[in-house]
Amino acid sequence: LKIPRHLIAVSASYRLETSYGLCIGRKPEKSPFGPEFSLIGGSYWMDMNRACVDAVLNLVDERPDLTAYFRDVIAPEEAFIQSVLVNDRSLKVSASELRYYDFSGGRHGRPHNFGAGDIETLRASGCYIARKFDETTDPGILELVDSKLL
Image (cartoon, rainbow, N blue to C red; front, side, top):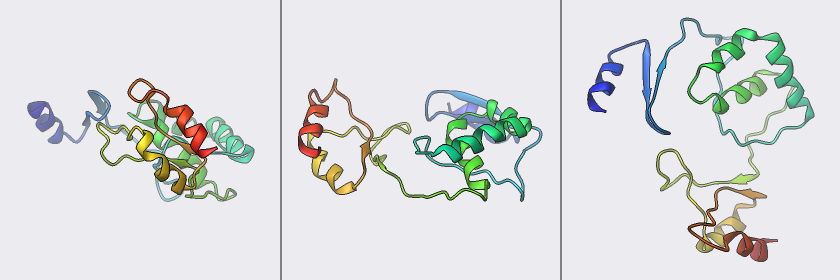
């Protein structure tokens, strides 16, 4: 990928992304972001109440330019809802999370798979939900979590 990366790097119109497989993107001609509406990124995994869901649905109806922009980006799930919620001043958005995940040691943008040796770390996190477990590499891990943490 050395040559394609170099060609993309000298272009102001294209982007090469390889975190989740090979993706080539074109930068849009016009951005819907500015002082009145900022681009916000974050985790796809979030909790929302009814007011937040209503805000997202209303914005989809009110801002076709914004939904059109996100329709063509590489990872819209990591910025669309976050941008809508943070830019809505009537909402109180918290940075606190109730999900525990660990990207240290992960590969290609994927989180660490928790195993039996992570039980105390999971307990200490204070979170209600953890991600990510793999029953094929650690059979019985979910039953162990249930027995030790519930």
